[in-house]
Length: 188
Picture 1: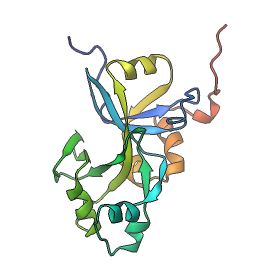
Picture 2 (picture 1 turned 120 degrees about the horizontal axis):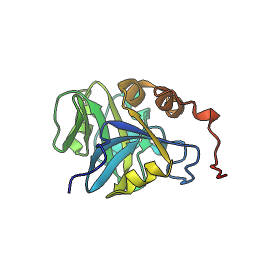
Picture 3 (picture 1 turned 120 degrees about the vertical axis):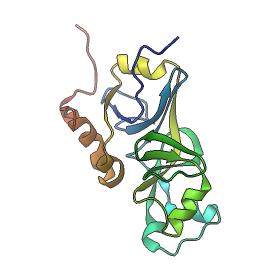
């Protein structure tokens, strides 16, 4: 049976102030895959406790770039927090790339981290530990419960905007000021 909702891949999922789950409060996630079996995304506005240098060192990958080693790794979500997910631009495919949109992919393989460490990676890349997952119909249900907004993914939000501005900027592109939305829902 085909899905009745449109696929949300390449959309930003923006937590509304009413979303109380501590894993997702005030978060923005890029939906990487969505089909009848569920959805997978990566939170793009929360830092983890790790730097890229620490992650590379744990993997036995050397980098001579001090700025690269100091980059913060994102906390991509509560699913597989030990696994790295690299959101990146470019047409080059890596060993386990999943195309999200033209020129936007997510990769979980070591080869992209090795390329980044030696300065031969994609122009823009964001490394996250963990991802977010929704079972079949779960994301659609959460959308009807007013937990999330969706907005088109924009490269500046994904790669260059400061993390603390992404939540408001993602909603702002569809005309929503999240600071004006109450953190509770009432019923008359």
